[in-house]
Length: 484
Image 1 (cartoon, one colour):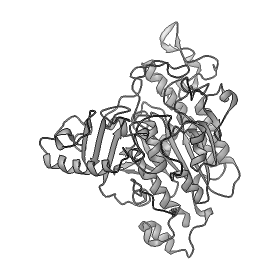
Image 2 (cartoon, rainbow, N blue to C red):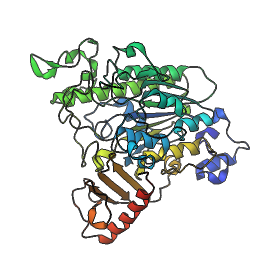
Image 3 (cartoon, rainbow, N blue to C red):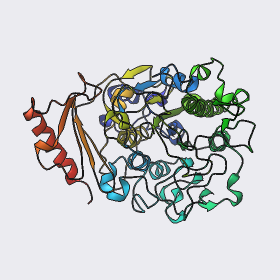
Image 4 (tube, rainbow, N blue to C red):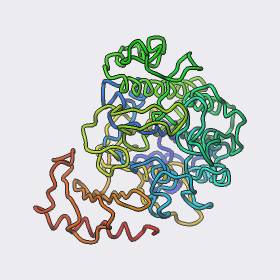
């Protein structure tokens, strides 16, 4: 074992016990060569059940292996929609801290220039920093990723895009496929976005370098439009006119035909299409891991994975190029709610941390949130900001690198620019309110015991008024920190 096993802070007093023990055996602080590469992978609209280790109907062998060999975060939370979650992971703060524009998917700037981000932190620590995939935190080049600490960026400035022509919705941001915030002529038309993003990531990983790298790998999959053409690139995904329960050329497209035959066991064609997109995403993650192995960097790389929110459920179509109407196309959830909800189904998603030899295989039962990733990574690379950052997240190294538990703390959600969904969890208790009026007293809330009622079916507020009052007071503290 060497110092890199738990990488840590320079001062032993700021470390977890395992890291402190390693540091005590070395007389010098870690050099830049001792710090790990870090890859943060974000999938899009991948629900809790749209991954194999939560649901054997999904074929995701690469994601399953990474989770099994690392720390599976069994109660991992995000925000109810893409832009708010990306704000949370990039800043370590709840999106409401930046104002209403950060609370919903938007093309407007989500937070101001100069805001500390994961990328600016890694750059300050001597890393090369890269973004591959979806930004969606300000869809104009003037507010793109290179202004927030990324040395290089490639993908879409806006949100979802046509999977093969990479255009956003018609209008101002339709053309947004870029490299370093310069729009690409022809927008790399004709190759699936998942493949383009994975290929770019592989190039970055295999590039010779002397410094460690940070890669923010934000896939567009499995967000709509779902379009899996295989070798039939000139033909958008469509129903087979001779058999409407099949997709045209489905038997010849590998993403519909996994080696285990799981996808073909799904009778619903729309669910089968989603499972094909999941298989495609998983294969892309496998390519990234293979590149790490080929380049001898696998053991020196920490991988964090999460979806950005719960499953989409249904979609009317016609918003993006080749955008199909789909109904109830995700795998069924064992919890209440979907994307946009502050019920568990909208915010409780698959996630894991994998670092060979550093994070042992385990399941983390403590509730954690994607806001925790920034302070955790800051600890691992010994980041010393010039001014304190008001993170809402906490350092997860005690549960990832050791076998400690986290103290109970508030987990807090609001959603929509005109906020109409509200929730707070503390320990096993969760309060929820839907409606346009801000919850100003205890009568506004529903109360759930998530240990006894993980599906949030039984509102027990009347039986526990003292608990509702305590959580309501916690909610008011959190809400007071938001920018109105």
